[in-house]
Image (cartoon, rainbow, N blue to C red):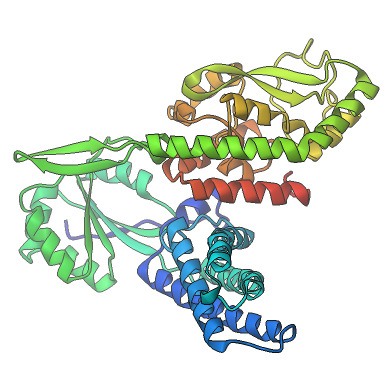
Length: 475
């Protein structure tokens, strides 16, 4: 009962899924560091913007400059907080840090320009604001990239130290689920979890004293809270340790669980996932209609040129329509510009496309170019306007593959809680045509998106997709 076991993770290279878990939550130290550095960079950007502006103006109202600089700094930090950049990290690499900073600053600068236009007395100049925006994007993006790199090194990693206390029968099954490169997991085998809680709360557990000396951050007991748990929570709090409980057999799920005490009977109440709440559904639909209509206005010349090129090379039909599985498992027809030969699947049947489309014998020469430039996907804006798809969401699959994945992945149908998207969280962090062996990883990222949905996250994904497509990085 008094022995400790330390799990050893020997994985020099972490996969994308492991990285996505390891950088989710920010500890207090890192949050304070980010806030302080962001404020410093924003203040420097505001001062530098005033210096730049001085070359274009003979008169500077320094009081107005200071006031507008403070407003800009406050608005930017508040926007970052609203996006969640001080609570959770959505950045899987350094480039993502720049995307989030630009989106956050853009969301913050837009209302300020309107306010400064309506109330010019509180602004030094809208030009100063725009210069501050550009300089802030550079300085804050650079500083956050450096911090991201520093925390990604072995020296910068501050692993969360968790101790799991359980009976031998429960210890290994729970450890296999909880083990991650994000934290250091210690195993404490005990005969009875409830007795272990009583001993630790009363100061009769040498293993607990050892965990305190080792700097344990979180102590997790197998099972559900018992009567002595209250004493254990208070003692652990004085030692700066958080107490948690892990009921064996409780499956991982999208819905959050609230533990409440009603009429002396503890209950677990399930919460709706953020992506499915009525208010978020309404905002998301409004965002989809606006962006899809705007997308069609901007891309119709490319759709027209693609149509002409297909007609010249291989004739009709120009539009490729295929059944895909949408929200709630309902089928719909997805629209694309045709990129393959007319009889592409006449002999081989449904095929999972992987890798470079130009190397697929079924793809036409025009089709290979259209797919590389993502022009073939543009007709899906019509699917969004019709309500079959969303701009952002899990990519829709064909029924034959959905049936296969349902058998292999028990949680696969959870991705059908929302409308499928033209782009998505998994789509911007994985190659465009992943191998079928990577579906488990894509499913995990799709579920992460549904769990952590916000309108601001949709804006970020849409912005990153646009940049990746524009600079041909969306492979």
